[in-house]
Length: 466
Image (cartoon, rainbow, N blue to C red):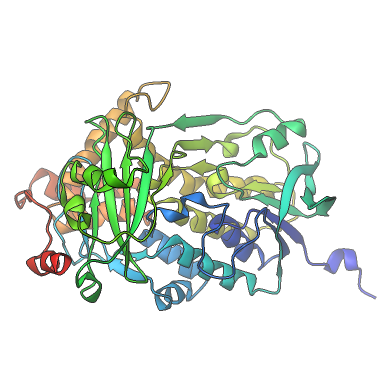
């Protein structure tokens, strides 16, 4: 008779069933039986859920995330498109003004395609795909209370369902519970030292309203329209128009301290008209709103440096926003969630899930995509007044100036734009900005003149006005 202790399949508990938790469960199912613990009761279809209040705001998935989605769950992107999402070429299908107030030309030559849809649709497709796996069990309405084990090894999680408390034993516990993660306290309760943390808070507030797609825009594949805030001009104000499924526009406006948008319906279009360019306000001023305004202020960049901990217990890993949460304006959270899950899968294909030291390897692997997105976000937000307790370093200031030059060059040169988008989409590391594709046009040109107005075609303008 075989020894069941040697042949049993490992077990994992994943805390949180948002995108990061679902992706982690999908990756782990190759190696373990997974229990997914979720505090809320999940909706059946593409509907809002209480645990993701930011879902009402505009979301897009950069091309690095599109690639990661399909590598982790082949065909997932196609399922989202079949549900009404669309893949758009950046910048060919986007009208965008950079933070340094430069309009990007709509070069159609880059390979980068971003996934655009409502967050409700995206989450519902991911949920359906992941939870169809028989190796994954969902426990809804269940709150994680603490870790079980000691400073050397985590052996499970204590949870509460209704009035019942119990312990779910596991070979690996993954915390993917988001910004509100309690992992720092759980680790100190086990006798481990506190984790190093950093916060950069530009004080950004968001306000979002959904509109019926005006005129005949739904018939022509209307582009995304994005006016980014300028950190050099406080308060920084920006906005985006995101055409999504159901012939709707999700319009999200943002502002930093002293220039925040509000939930006042009468002020929404006026705020959009007051941006550095009034194009968004002009597009929505006569459009039909489809509901009230949703607002959010929880937008700080917050990172926990678990990968630098001198002591780390076996059997525990933290992923997604529980490691680092970003200002949503950069649109990197979903991409990082998928890339972290891929990093986890890569490690476990060469190391046993139960082996000593594997959890630390997982944590360090997850830090790489986290760091790439963190540097991009903080490189902008650190320059807003009051964003951080310490001023940007000389190196950070140099890099910020270089990125501004890269953006200015990419706005007018397709080769440079390709290099810029490789980095912004989290497909390649920041060193790509120092490649000949960027440096040659940056230093030598020739360069087309800057655009003086948003590059909307006459047909696009007419479709919005009809």
